[in-house]
Length: 331
Image 1 (tube, rainbow, N blue to C red):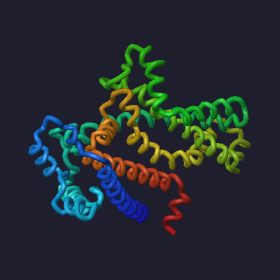
Image 2 (image 1 turned 180 degrees about the vertical axis):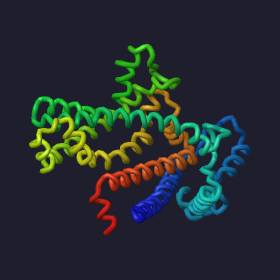
Image 3 (image 1 turned 30 degrees about the vertical axis):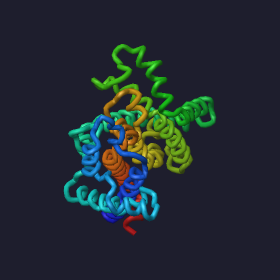
Image 4 (image 1 turned 180 degrees about the horizontal axis):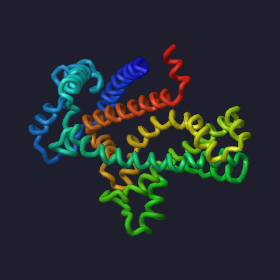
């Protein structure tokens, strides 16, 4: 078990380094900076701002552009290299993800995450509970009534859940449900009830995948010898399912839970925007459109940590539930 954890942590560290490096390059390839639209600021003030945050061109860059006709982004490689080293230094030794340049002046990226992450986490937990609470029973029922209208109808609903994107289901639920129920708000978050519809819209696709995975796992387990023996003994089907089938049937679901929860928590951009939930998704979208390089870098790194942590938890849970995996690790 310890070797598995160390191996996964090593892989995660290398992945995070690659993630930060790629995002660092991509946000600097994007044209402009957060202050390019500040028309009312005097030129000398804008020059000082650009110099403070590393947007100003150095004399070496100007020389390479004028004399060697190099593109500005290529000429700025030396400056970007210094920024890259400084970013890692601040991250490792100061736990500093950088400042919010324009959109959230006075806040650091760490403070922004601290304020917004609980909303995204709670929304993700609600969506995951809904997905498991709906997907697992649907999958079990579909497997027990294989090749009947119940099976076909259940899988049809699951396929619709997979095919309908969140930018369609979110507004649709707003119109059909939130506007009809008096205690549910169509936007904002003032209470737990305000998360019901966003969580359903966000977890709809995950519930559909869980239903299909549960059905496949149940069909495989139902054909095993020990289950047929339990049926021959006359045990009630409910007892057979709960005591003998679910543990093995849910192994595919467990392997999917980690990536699914990470995707729900980190991929709720659309739902948070539609329902005006002050989570990380809104900040990430605004950071991209507003050229907030530190917000984009910090949230991408934080998202990466969440995804890798969820995957590690999923792997450990599979090992704990599956004795064969534990034996393979010992070998």
